Amino acid sequence: MYSAFDSTDYLFFSPAENDLPRHVRIRFWPIRFLKQAGVSIWLHLNARRIIAEHRLDKLNIHTGPGGVLLTRKLPVPVVVTCHHTYRQQYRHLKAQFWKRIFFPFEKRTYQLADRIIAVSEATRQALVADYGIPAGKIVKICNAVDAGDFHPTPLPKAPRTLVYVGRIAKRKGIDFLIKSMPLVKERIPEVLLLVAGKGSYLDEVKALAARLQLQENVRFLGFVPEEELNALYNLGECVVVPSVFEGFGITIIEALAAGTRVIGTDSDGIREILQSGDYGRLVPYGDLRALADAIVAELQSPAPAAPLLPEYLAPAFASEYRRLLEDGAA
Image 1 (cartoon, helix red, strand yellow):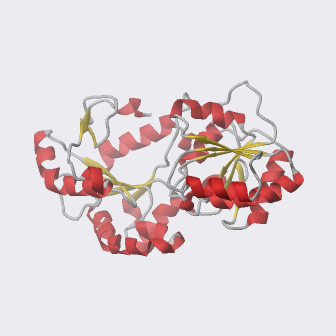
Image 2 (spheres, rainbow, N blue to C red):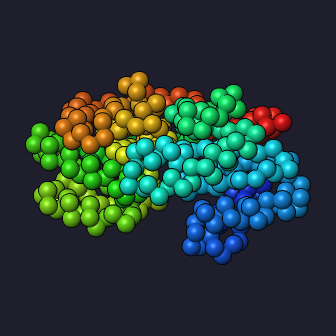
Image 3 (cartoon, rainbow, N blue to C red):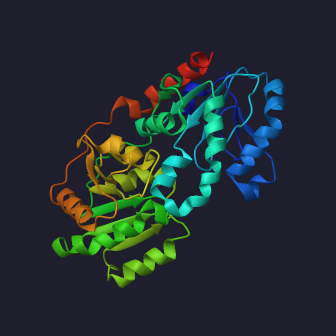
């Protein structure tokens, strides 16, 4: 996906160690404790310096809950990529009421931006409705996958097998999925759910599966490296994304690129990918019977997913992103 940006025209700043071309690692000790809030602080302290030092003519920052906030105007055009907003998240996760303190800072970030990239139509609409951002200032460019990394394989699928890939956290809806499994098991006793991921909620989820007597039907795989995900997606007859909320849902398009249909919850970032029915099914979050019925229907009549639309593939993503960075913020 990054090959289109592999030139001397771009620099990438992040606190991570990686092999991106022209990557500049951010070394700022508060990031260790403050995570992305630390990156926001670093940006405010260093933005003008790095613009001058590296002779930058534009800056692209990524925002969203936990992302970078910008509250002052910079001397070059700024393109802000919005993965979803704090307000969107709060509508679905009322327990995170403390995040409301970020609303004015987030609004200021989008007001200062010269252009905004929204990764979904729902996020684009939220920016307009919640913060009054002019629609003409926002361009939708979906997240994308590389078909070289995610693609169908000739190996047979494991019958009656579901796959979950993601963080083991309550907001990801993994308990919703586990609670639906006894209803599935009533009709498909040999059903198997493969759970790939790690997180702070793992012990509770394992205990829940044990209480529901699902030891033979749910297998916890732990963290699965990215290079092994394509094989896992191909193994399942269906992938389930049961999240309370997603800004986009990269797992969905990874699974679809691998040729496997997806059941997802009817929330912002998931809905627009699955609503046509070509790629899978939508269910209301929390409706155990609806989720179980969808799983049974997919397992009883397994079928490959329709080919992924070009807008979800790396070439279209890279072309649109590069065009906007080069021309759109002028």
